[in-house]
Length: 351
Image 1 (cartoon, rainbow, N blue to C red):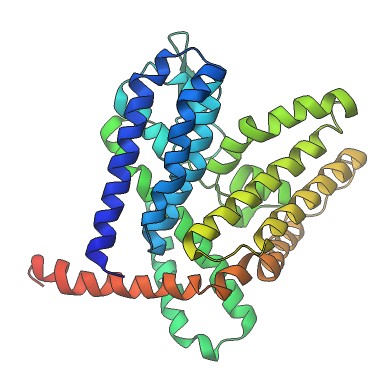
Image 2: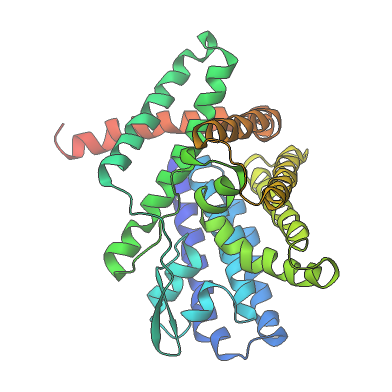
């Protein structure tokens, strides 16, 4: 991989995506919501599907795929029917619209009928010291890969889990820094300490990568719930909605895997999310039956939750990554980055 060419492709992809969203801002927002607006948005959805195909690196490609193919497309499709985050911001300045459409941001306030309404959740603000600690921990994980042949398979599994969590959280956090600094938007945290989760429902719904449930709820969960409620009732109607949400998440992860590896899908990652969707349905049903009369201690339930996520990840989530060499590709790119810092940035600053 030629680093200079990859960076040029990356910049070209994002300039093109920005231009496409300018079209949406100046033209599509003037079209009444509904099928007509959808027809004008579908070419942009297709454009976002093919744009990341020009990228081959893991660390530039993965965020771009996630932001454009998944988040931006879902936001645009929701916007066609006056739903989702863009429906409240179409009358705001262009940079606000672009940031919310293209990046994994969820403002703490929305504008409705000229009024500012808080959407702030209970999640706290991340402390800078904690972010620095996570950067150091990620560096330690990468360093530990040098001794992978000497490590037990369970230790490697823990390293992979830490790597996924730390890398995703730090990339998302770094992405929103210019949005917060330049536009003054108050952004909700994208993660809420997933290692403190006490159940699968807590892990996936309130702690892990909150941009995903934030976009899947209006796009999948609520429509399926509204339909299934008619046949099954309000409570039982939640179960098909939960299952459908996890299925869509699995298919989108499968699509991301394809972009990164260009390998034929084997559907393990889809089954990972289908399995977790089934388990969340069981968890919700059991909680409903018990009605809060009995609860496992949060330390025990927390350990069991993380152990289950790690075990099923080792079984279904990581095999496609390892089989297609994506793990080694990501590690090698870290070493390339270190080499670039040594060869270019340090001499520039006189070191």
